[in-house]
Image (tube, rainbow, N blue to C red):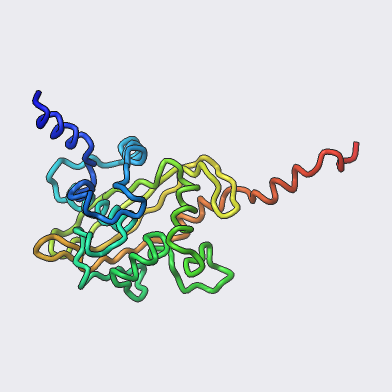
Length: 240
C-alpha cells in the first residue's frame, strides 16, 4: 500500500459512521476544545443499546445522522460560519411549543439549556437552564452519563422538506448529578420532532416535543449526596 493509500485508509477509519462534517476541513474549523471530538464511547453505547439498525442510505438513517451531525456542530463548533448542517440565517429551534431560538441563541445556550429551558414555577423546576452556562450544563450531564447520552431515530413519518420523526435518548446514570448520587440505572425518554430542510438538506426549523419528567425522574432518583454524607457522620459522635 502506498503512503497516499495508507493515509486515505487512516482518514476513512477515523471518520465517524454517524456524523457528517466531523473531519471535513477540520484544520479550518474553530473547535471549542481545539480539535475535532471523538465519539467512540457513545457510539459503542449506541450500538449496544439501539432498538433499530437502519440500512445505509435509508431515510431513517439519513435523518438520524443529520440530527447527530447538528448536535456535534452545536456542541463542538464555536462559529456559525463553520456549521454545515443548518442554514444559520433561517434556523430556529422550538422545544415543547416555546418561543423559538435563533441559531446564535441556540449556540450560546448550548443544546442542554436550549432543550431544558421552561416556564414552570420555580418550585417545580428540576433544572434551571437560565442559571446554567454552556460549560456548566454540559459538565453536569457529562458527569451523570460518563459513557455519553445516546440518541436514535425510532420512526420517520414523512420525508423532506418537512421531516417528522420519533426519537429515543438514553444513557446510564453512573456519575453524580446536581447533588444526587448515581444509581447505575438506564435513564431514557422518547419524543417527537419535525425538521424542515432546504434544498441542500440544511435544517431551517427544528421542533422537538418530549416530557422532561421522563429524564429527571431517573436523575433525581438517586439519593442526596449531602444526606448520604451526613448519615455516615463522624464515627466518634455515635453512641455505643
